[in-house]
Length: 143
Image 1: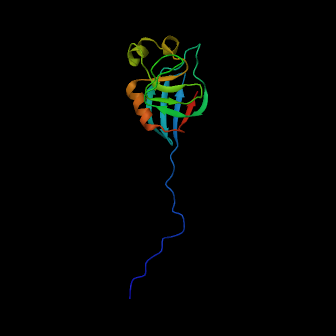
Image 2 (image 1 turned 90 degrees about the vertical axis):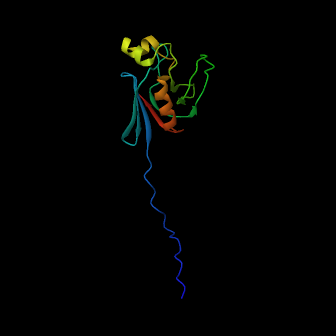
């Protein structure tokens, strides 16, 4: 007698828990942290907007990504950009004249001396890692 074939279950299989990716930008400490659910994945130093061009505070989402982007508004390179506002503010690679770590060591309030036009700038390796990790829709909390 042939062995009966089992029919696949019509019950839905339990889904794997969905992780919640979040990027947190602390403007006071100039620190960017990335979390997957409650687990911190990255912690980076950053440079945010200056007094005349502050970085927007609030809760956003990554709207679009660009590995290589040239700002038409300011004619600056914005590599590994994660855009989180409709007016072009993004987390992206810092392209300054001196290394970011050297500037931070020389001046505590780095944003007032080397601040952006509202973007959050990161060292190249940090921007590249965050770009690879984040996806469209990742939450960005700026406080």
